[in-house]
Amino acid sequence: MKRVHNFNAGPAALPFDVLKRAQEEFINFKDSGMALMELSHRSKEYDQVHEKAIADLKELYHIPNDYEVLFLQGGASLQFAMIPMNFLSSEKVGNYSLTGSWSEKALAEAEKLGKTAIISSSKESKYNYIPNINELIPTDDAAYVHITSNNTIYGTQWAEYPDLGDIPLIADMSSDILSKEIDISKFSMIYAGAQKNLGPSGVTVVIVKKDLLKDIPSSIPTLLNYQTHVKNNSLYNTPPTFSIYILSLVLDWVRAQGGVSAIEKINHEKASLIYNCLDESNGFYTPHAQVGSRSNMNVTFTLPSEELTKDFLAQAKELGFVGLAGHRSIGGCRASIYNAVPIESCEALVAFMNDFKTKY
Picture 1 (tube, one colour):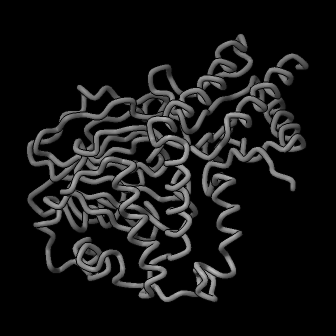
Picture 2 (picture 1 turned 120 degrees about the vertical axis):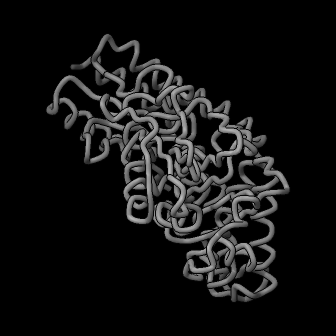
Picture 3 (picture 1 turned 135 degrees about the vertical axis):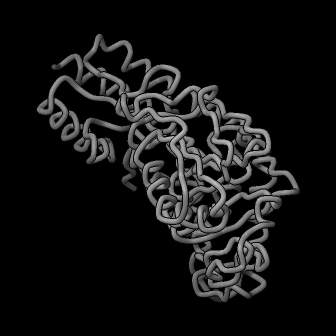
């Protein structure tokens, strides 16, 4: 079977063991005589999948008991609007840290719904660094502070998170959730599209502190109100059952690797391999992100010319390296090395990069 080196930014690589298991169970799930996609979301067979996924995520990520875990739809993009709809009152201000395109989009949605403030930004440097957490000073009337923990387009990542006291910290962790250990209690809410580290596209995970939910206005449309999904265990409407099933298998795989701490160690090794290659290339490869802000999920870099970049990407594709083109908004190259990308793929990429540099 032909398998490429998958460096796509999302939807992204899934663990091969997960794909094999899903294939084995596809036609006749748990002797039900049906594929899981055919099962009612109210059936006992699916209910076991649903409850196990929630329980496993809580266990693997050490989520405290005063948090809810929700499986929603609409991707992180819908959360950009749901957050201010639920938590931004007319007397308060939504505080945003701008570190890339996705935080800009989150801010743009909030601006349609209430008052906002930009309390830190690296836009002036083309988002090549993460602002110092000591400079993240909320406004006096802050409803919450919103950050994007990892920036896929620019290849930057928060190495530490601010302690804001009573002000809720909300993080879009779509591209680095479950890639490293974090202290969940620092956050009032974490949300993530699954299609990088958690599973396939179609399901969005929300981890939200119960205290944050108590003042949601009753005027919020039913399906856009977090309380609706809490009260109905994410089953108010038909959930993306197959995506949640694959997510559950990914969590099994994470446990088999030794848990999140083991995954974090491997991710650091993968990223170090590629960053060392960039740093030792004598300027042939230039990283976009500043040291100290570099992402362990998305390694972004440029070559000396557009012509060389095209040659690099063409030759990489011929050799089975997929998804290395940078985002269309900034160009260059990007290697997305999420949890399921094996270290062997990173080693093969580094070997190709060194060979390409030598030839040119």
